[in-house]
Image 1: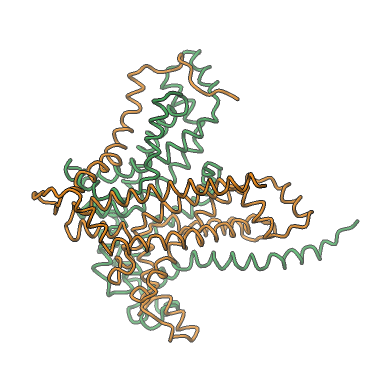
Image 2: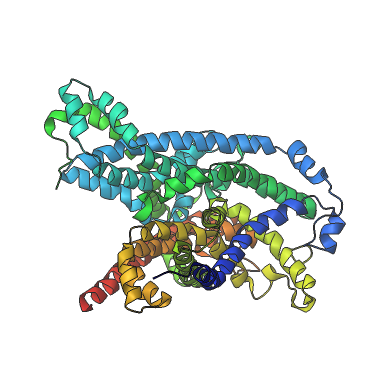
Length: 283
Length: 303
């Protein structure tokens, strides 16, 4: 029986029209606030007041120039970058090794350690912020370059260890046994054989940890005081406080704060999507 | 079943074992475990953070029981959680289903765009939406003006609608996040089952509710648990959008504990509140997880 391809196609378009429209509308709402922020930063104060939605009639770059030149913007970016890199390296390192041991061993001690690490998933970090502040303050760890990486690394361990541990369950131990027979040391086996095989999950964990560390706000506000160590969210908060009347500047400042991660995200979006959907997060 | 456990020949010696695991355990304990004990300790004191420390036993906890703002904040948290469970997960499920169909255009662009807000900082998005809601130059009032309804303009974050206004960005930011997780879960469903149901005459909604949803039950339970946990913690959005205001109308527990400790300088009271919040969280998260598992298990037996 011949299929009527044309009417099939029309029917398919019609049936799917509503879903497509809904999806497109939501996609637009996801991106439009940022676009609005972007072009509003080019408007003068009066223009912002007059009409919020329209594109600027005259593009004033002063606001953006101000943010880039007159504030400590690049210092904030550097602080965020540095914190994030240290956090990701430390977190992946610790959680890989810990996840490996938790996956390969079976004992009561192993179960206790696993449960110990999983506790933090049920503990809301915000509830601990106040006593955390006390701990850091008493041990003189406040307001250093390593303050935030310590917090971020520890906070990311639970999820990362969980991911690594489940993943390594599916990695056959035969390769390690073969290598052991051939005389390879434990370190050699762990880092040159097992670790490369874990690349997918380590990338997923790394991406999630990086985003978390980059965007974190509460600890950054509490534990850091000096202007030289402020991260992007904190810097923006200060900036907003100083310039809240200058609408154009506020838009430009907020836009600049979003720019780094936007750029990274859209360039790497394919990798990010693949990493996330590789099934590791199915839980 | 393949056994992937290490036999003793492969094991490194005790020293190595400890050396590898200790740093992680120490770091984790220092940042996440020790503070719990600290909070318990200082919760029994009246302390402003300075040198004057007065033991007052359970008075802080008694005061929390009478703290109207605390309970109002808790109410707000619960409203946020319920709204997010319905809207974040609901929309995420619907969108995930839609995106899974044939005949949908721009699939990978949609995935990228929907997920995009969740990679941004909650605090910065708070500032973005504060700008959107601004009475003078905000996008929302601008749009209302443009479509000819300037009478609907409000100072949204200072109005009675403030809680709704604050919930919208929270929902908006994470719909894509859950959607990606659900999509990953959907990919494990065998399409044959859905095709058989179609042959039997099931329409889209029936397929979704009676076949797809039960099959991704575990994913959904994880999502619900994480959603509840995450919204109990909500801080950044509220801090930057309203700071709990106007007054205390949009206050949430984490922000109230912060203000009590660092703005009112009542560290002892704040610590006690942290412990109470911790308690409530464990009960809510653990309890909901237990309940969800229970509810869905019964259905399976009935079928």
